[in-house]
Image 1 (cartoon, rainbow, N blue to C red):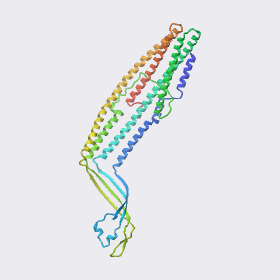
Image 2 (image 1 turned 60 degrees about the horizontal axis):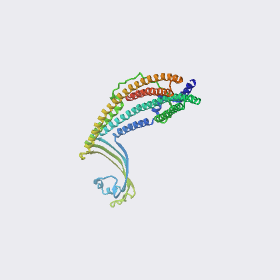
Image 3 (image 1 turned 180 degrees about the vertical axis):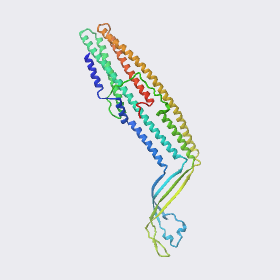
Image 4 (image 1 turned 90 degrees about the horizontal axis):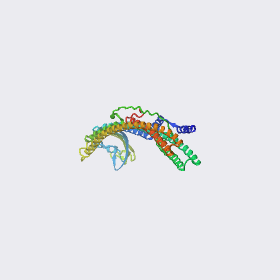
Length: 446
């Protein structure tokens, strides 16, 4: 008996070697999880999108340049006829070119667009709010996933220890019967039954270990690739439950849908701007220059004013206001507007569905919690009874009052009851974590 408990102590020590606490797992997930990092990037993208729309309202300043070749000579800037005939030599003093170069700076800004830019900015602001809420909700979901995987691993670890204990007792029983068989006090059938019970228990060990390995792999992925070895035991209070009594409409999951409805409404307002005219301001200042294409010599004075190939330049500036109003488009604007109105109605329906879904999930979770508590109480009572029965059955078997089948069946029932006890205990904790997740209180993330 002493060797048995020494053996189990070694198993326990090995099982919890390099164990990671639940709090540590949560902190590592919040720091390294790749999906959560992606939500941060999405939030940053929405912030930058909002900033780009904000500054776009101030217009654009561009540096512009061009080169054009003409078949006929052109003046560097448009000139009125009177300037060209103001004196007998005026036409010879004006440079012309077939190769026109231009360089300057322009500024354009929308003066009025029916509040399209304003609504666009408000949409981007709401989109940023949605991204922020999604980031907070992603944290909540991540913590819940870590807890769920962690508790599942812990439950299987407990089951594995119990199964190893059961396998050890079956092995001892098999070895004992083997000796008795060799001495002729036990039949070959008894030996085969004991061997089968031992092998079956070892097979169950392998199944549990495979399931633990699968869950560890999944948790390691959630931790951003950090290896997870073993889970530490956690305290499960079967008597304590806190109902947060939070208004469903205050939950982030509902607020996301609510914000999307506001975005749909703003899109309608934005499309209404298409029915208004658009007024914009455009301005430009720069220089036109090019090589003179002829030698300008006046026949009246004989004086050469400009040599062929001389590079000349003239400043050129302009400012103007543009007006554009689409008065007819064969129903294009009407179709777009109606499409967004339908989208808004769809979002309103989704608001109702989301609220009902949250309330349904919460009610189901609370019912499952009560059921899990009842299952735990039942499993605990059953285990205590079967534990007492097994102790009596061992004595009976040693005195030849019952068969090996009876003893093995009693031990199997006890082991099964213990498995149910472990499952119901940690299932209760997982449901508690799920309720906290629905209430968005999982870990009280700030």
